[in-house]
Length: 89
Image (cartoon, rainbow, N blue to C red):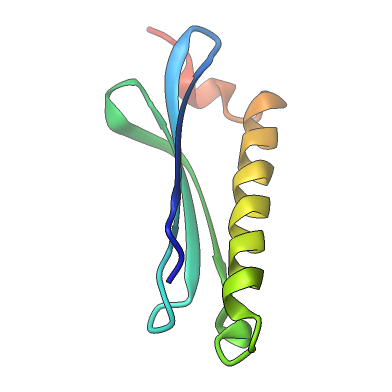
């Protein structure tokens, strides 16, 4: 199991948080959540790596997949894909 990523950042005057977690060999799923102020999840991405569990380079490959998934979700955020979900009230 890999140690997850957690980062806080500002996006359009809103404090956001990105969290990526590895479910481990018994639950080989990478989950990335984007949170806005107050801890509300506004976007999630999940991907299975079941095919990699027995790979000798599994840990390294999972770490790469975690980075790639986090980056992809942040690119979607930057593109405005989630703006309707995080609009300030």
